Length: 247
Ligand code: ADP
Image 1 (cartoon, protein in one colour):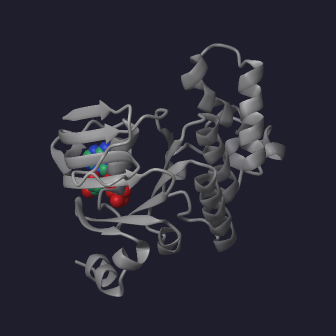
Image 2 (cartoon, helix red, strand yellow):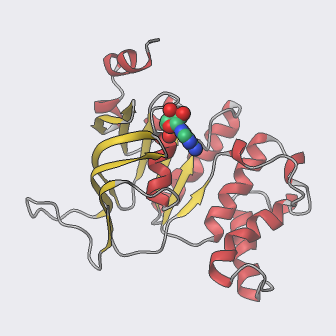
């Protein structure tokens, strides 16, 4: 498996000017004894929102983990254009309800990569954390325990942790799943704003409304890429029925 970090945005073979933030070719990945992703080739365009769409178990989280560098692909190529390391916002359910952490401490963890685990936060760290919490509307929840918050509040705290990493590439795993419609819309609107401000956003989702608000969709089924393009091109009734129909 080859991972490359390019100084310049990648050029597609036809030489047309395109601004790819991440590109992967013939990517295979999975878990010990459990191959999941098979021969995936696609690109993530800079300053857009890409939705990884597909039913449960189709490989969305695995692909996100590979893009985040948490899962190593078994073969294929993965190329990043110049930029900061990605910030990864894990699934809300993967963050224990019982962790004795306040909302602010959770957001502060986003600074660990920058300053190391045990160093005291600097003034700049505090300013970055303040600004991420304000942006997500969670500044007044700072002293509350993570486990006490509503699903939507907790999701916003986790996104604030991602923002505190100050990356131009934000990867989110099911950020709107399981939330009420108002919380879902709020998060989708926020992600759209982040893109407008120059962030490249990739979200794994089986929330079709969220996927329809993306600029591009990668449709996964059984670890294979079965569609890519705009939501209108990819999320057709035919494709959705084919993929979501019960086995
Ligand atoms: P999705 O995010 O689309 O629901 P995942 O990427 O989580 O899909 O899972 C794809 C497949 O990989 C599923 O069959 C799942 O059971 C399997 N899988 C996920 N995580 C692990 C793991 N840690 N070990 C073994 N298999 C896993």
